[in-house]
Amino acid sequence: MVIRVYIASSSGSMAVRKIKKKQQDVLGFLEANKIGFEEKDIAASEENRKWMRENVPENNRPATGYPLPPQIFNESQYRGDYDAFFEARENNAVYAFLGLPAPPGSKEAEAQAKQQA
Image 1: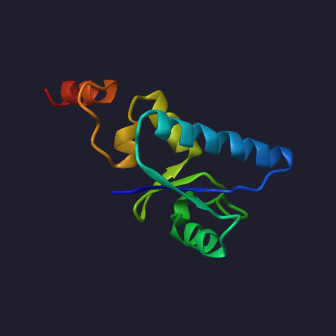
Image 2: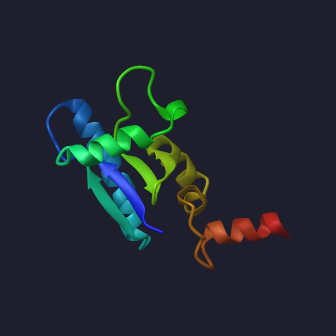
């Protein structure tokens, strides 16, 4: 399973800086936790942009415009945007959010063991 994070490499306006911060937050977490991932840059590839826009589910799209990065997928399965990632991180449920098994000894694995007991 490969986690794919759709990002935009363009820089500039304040809105883009907010997007950059969110992207760095997601990518930094994945790197720090040694979770393998691929970056897919929608600013550098029309194919990536088109794929991301077509594969974000209808109910997760903004009322107007297009979904903004970062958008997170496990292979081709949509997992969520930054807000969903942030909420999962706050609840120690990032591995479940990503569709991955929690590593033994992690807070998330301990919480899952308690729920199953």
